[in-house]
Length: 373
Image (cartoon, rainbow, N blue to C red; front, side, top):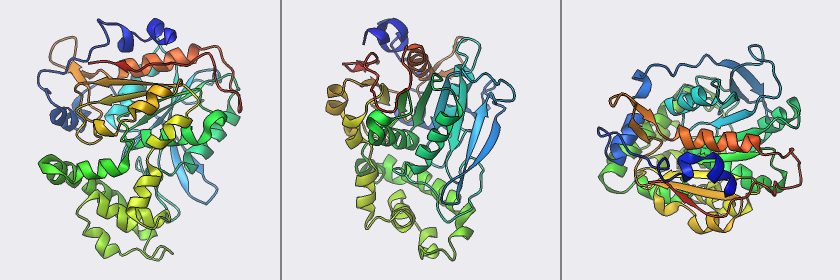
């Protein structure tokens, strides 16, 4: 915890560890809605270099690099490895805003964004997409990167929303063997059963968020459904097209593709919350208490508190991946969350430990939860 107090003022300084939402975005719903409207903000363009990686089963994922090895071949640059949210990609504003900050002259990192199968305007070569709990692709790509760079080059994972669930589950599965030096979880649902209940409850859940997310999933699936017409999964494509909720889609597609007997089995198995006690690298979890998509009731407070490797930062407001505050001019908004994320990542890059496949980083532990509100 001493390390956080000395290096992460956005998490620990009484004057700076405060999120003050923009006066125009005064509740979680407005903050969440604003996430999709931030494309209008200038100054966040990123000129990625794309690499297509072949996977053991014949599928592919797209890695977007910034800066690329051609632009900056220095193998010692710290690597920030980012996982996006549901049907997203490297183009999302919440990804690009972090990329622009963490790669600037003051921070000097390299970013690699994992676009999941079919995401980020990529194509699929096999009848398989991705799921909230499928970690094999992430494991393969990270091991490949670990072998590509010097053992002293830190790789730090940052996951957003669905990507944070995948990341935390992976880190817990790996335990002492994790190739990441540290990780950041942002807007994690933790409990997918609870998240499903929230999305099907009340006006905002059942009539707004579940419809938006269901439509995102259907558009995503429709771009790739030609691969499933004659697949072994025997999907009922007509029923898929009539899905009314995210749960319907997961029942008709996701749980079948990934071999679960029921959608409840899928949600239970894929939830990252139960993996928190097994985390053995420094992990920062950042959640908003008014997140209308990922309920604060699902945050595993006790597990985070009892694990010396994990720390929790919560804000009273911020919505789902929003955290928009007023900019320096009072009108333009900026995402506050990039401050604690980038500070934590940089603190972890400076910790004097060498990657080891077996030994946990004993000198980077934290013991208490941090609350910013």
